[in-house]
Image (cartoon, rainbow, N blue to C red; front, top):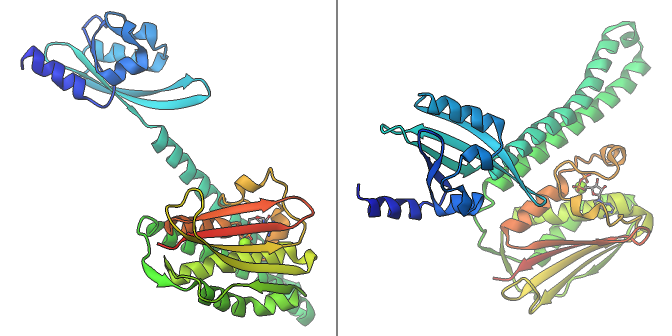
Length: 343
Ligand SMILES: Nc1ncnc2c1ncn2[C@@H]1O[C@H](COP(=O)(O)OP(=O)(O)O)[C@@H](O)[C@H]1O
Ligand SMILES: [Mg+2]
């Protein structure tokens, strides 16, 4: 290849690439590598600019004759941390070509996956431990007593229900994630969604002695959506209002057509679910949509919560190009606004 062709090739490379001479001095660098290390890297020893013992050791191996090797390192710039993977190959002429790739996102996704698996295992293990304990007890002499048996079986049924609730939420989360990139297009009447949801939750609302203030005008435009998923959104938001806001004795369900609002290209519909309960300390609000995040674990669990509800809501709204806006101050209840674009 001609020199100009080689230069053109290097210049076009989107990723940082360095060419090292057999003695370790940097001979050429792609623009992305110059962005990373600065112009002064040319003609310098790489290890003088990249003080990473693992990378240096890897370079030594390749300079000593190994054909290919790889390593990784972490760069700190300001508060940002990036993780790089570097692959070194030796050319026939003895030159070393180092290609770097930013694997921060991959690493973050991997860490998230590990956390998720750990969380799921933990959430399943506690009810399972309770169940096994009671099975063992019932297998012993305590199992002969009718009263004890009834009592224990009831506890066991509760734990089994908790486990199936968790599995149901996990399945629902994974189904939503699987189609998250595909925007739903069927016209959906929000009024119908809210009516169906409230009818299903009526017994819970009545049992909690909550007065429902329903303010949804007729003739709201349809939104492109997935009916069942939108029912899931409002089911969780209204259920949360009932579970965590019951103290206030009142729940508002309101919808409005908004001709324009920041962050949206056109008109949208905003559905607000507002309770008058204890409310939420603002420091917790940004974390509420994280998977398994619950402010009061024991309380959420006692009411059959998994901490996945708002994570599912967020995914569904994002699939609909919509948004969830949470507002609350302690002692004044909480409002959850779901905003859905009309087109
Ligand atoms: N209306 C509300 N008022 C106060 N806290 C709430 C409300 N809605 C949700 N939360 C808090 O957010 C957490 C997460 O909610 P969610 O994801 O639906 O999980 P779950 O209801 O299964 O616990 C709840 O555990 C609760 O601590
Ligand atoms: Mg919930």
